[in-house]
Amino acid sequence: MIRECKIDSMLADYCLEHKQSGVIEHYLDFNYEDKKSAFDKYWELVRK
Image (cartoon, rainbow, N blue to C red; front, side, top):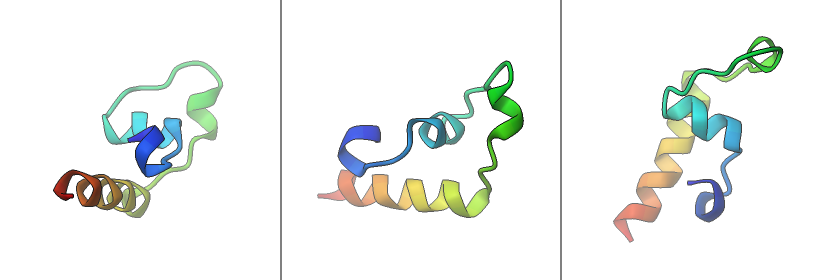
């Protein structure tokens, strides 16, 4: 997902419901549209 789809690693973690800890969790600002876009790119790759 990160390498092939060029998706930010923090967004990939968010998509997989991984919890961030420390200061970084306060600065992440992903939303449903970000997650949907990432999964759309991923599923496009899987379908090929």
